Length: 134
Image (cartoon, rainbow, N blue to C red; front, side):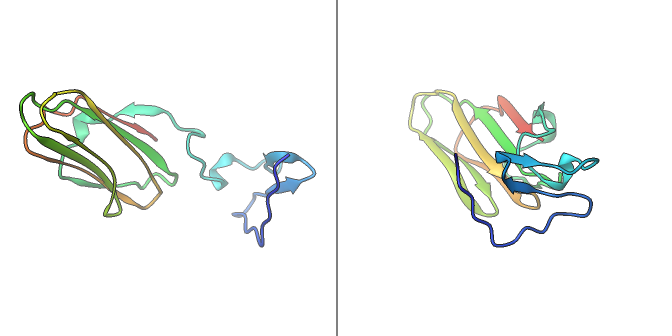
């Protein structure tokens, strides 16, 4: 069994968090919803957002929950290319391809209220896939 020590818990109005006797589970009070506990993947699904996304554009996660961002691109064969995925100005993932043209996958978790940015250097094909778990 896991052990978790907490100094204080301040649930949002109408929710409670039960730890201890229930083991490794989190229990919501009767009538409460999961919305008081913004967990990644709970009540979310993967969405294709490629049509509304572009390189070198900063986006803000305002969903109320953390999201996962997954991007796949294919560099042009014969061109040195670097692609980056940043969250709050911090480069989370980077890939450099010197000549092969292999597909590149970048993924990051973006906390609620944080910004995220996909950038590229040199020649990259259009974005193949841009999916977000939201």
